[in-house]
Length: 253
Image (tube, rainbow, N blue to C red; front, side, top):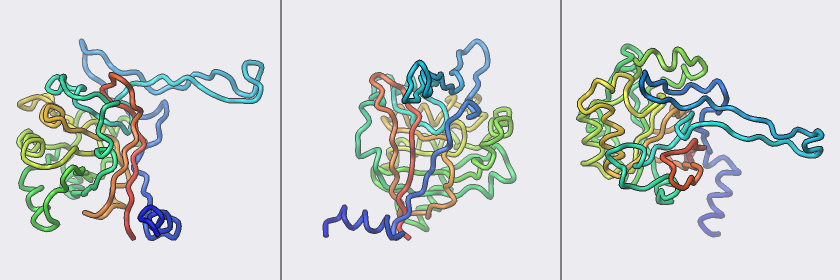
């Protein structure tokens, strides 16, 4: 039996669980709102083309209106000025999209502090217990924030949401073998990151280093600290700075 046959059988028998980490995408999906004079993305919207009617008697389909950075989505280097000479979403290395993941749980800290920041020391303690961060893999930050995702006001929380310090973002970008970080919040940076030095350090350092970000994940509590395999499926938009994505994990049970 080949390796893929073993994986198929394990999925069918429950030896491997497929865990969906993607938030449903709809007109009520929370989106980041920037203050004036900055421009904002549009909410997700379906525009009906036909639905079993005179415009198309046997088929239903829609035009999609949305921004690249809406809902569960992938950030790539060209999204940020520090990575403007890097790759777009159509050029993301395939091995980046199927890669090992580890989950660091900061939900206890976040429960008492909406502005909680992940620090280098937190990650080093994780490594001391679970081993080094995976080469070419993902660090997923479980904050518990996804519990708010059905209420846009609570989810956006007037720019009070957890993230990571500037020092931690730089260290993850420059000193670890990761390909990216994933979070449950609307963006990879903390809600107050506009006031950090530099502003939005996770975007600045990670994308500037040719790495990636994933946002608005959910169900991270169903993943082990180590050992899962992440699968990220963005649209390969030529010239795109990111894309809504279906994200799931393979977990051995």
